[in-house]
Amino acid sequence: MIRLKWSNNSMMLLSVLMAILLWVYVTNVQNPVKEQEFRVAVDTRGEIPQGLSVTGLPQSVVVRVRGNNAQLNGVRSTDFQAVVDLSNLSEGSTHRPVQVTAPSGLQVVQVSPARVDLTVDRIIQRQVPLRVSVKGEPTNGFSALEPVVQPTAVLIRGPAKTINQIKVIDITANISGTSQNVEQTLMVPVPSGVSVSPDRVKVFVPVTRSLPSKVLPVVVRYAGNPADQYQVVRAIAQPAAVQVFAPSEVLKKLAGIDTEPINVDGISDNLIKEARLQLPAGVVDIVPDKVEVVIQVKAKQPTTPAEQPTTKPADAAPTPAEPSQP
Image (cartoon, rainbow, N blue to C red; front, top):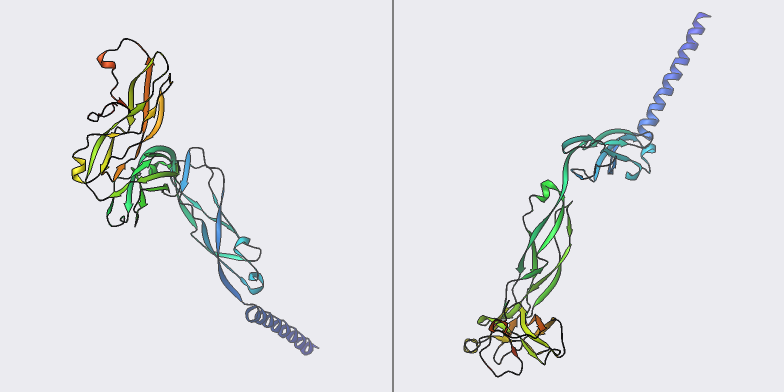
């Protein structure tokens, strides 16, 4: 009886051992454990205090997990959650762990990076000037003048450390192969995390023939008469001078550039109008080719030499050209 009982126990023990070996075989050979990496988008929890900004937060982390084929089958990056807690932040540097939640059954082996280095900075805004440069060259026989940008400065807003390093913002206009003035609307480039207003500006690059040039005053011409008991006291051009391109012999004979005649008939208040410039014989180009004119009038009164207008009616006898007074 005793030998039979021992034999039965041996058979039971052998059966259990065989079952364990079979389970190990099925688990490791038919359904082996392996590791796999997933790139997981980083989310945040908690609110950033007003007036502060946070830099250094990665867009994603790499998560390595361990599991068998059945557990890993069909798992996607979106099934994971990677969270950084931004609660209770204060100005300066700080470290925060990346908390990862994996699908059921998978073991998180590694998170890269496991923690993030954050910089918390004040949000400030400041006005900075724009600087325009040109890229390329115009067509042969033409040359580019100094570019103009409007507006000349923009308002930037962002972390104080970044904003304080920005002294000027450079914008580049492409003028390759052009034979005429270039007008472009360009984006204002700013670093990541910085906002700018306006985010687009207008750039004007005058392109003229490669000829001698001379800066000449603008003479405002007007025609007609203001309303009864009113008189023209001043006519102002803005800009007050323009750049004229022409052969040297033509430039020597010029003392000023006239506007087209501006009609002042019946006006009893100041008149603001855009006026084109008249192109004298032999002149190839004028930059700019139009100006803004302000005609000032007032009620008639005894005139004094100081009140005599500095500009001439369009039908006045030819005299040496005079610049408009600023």
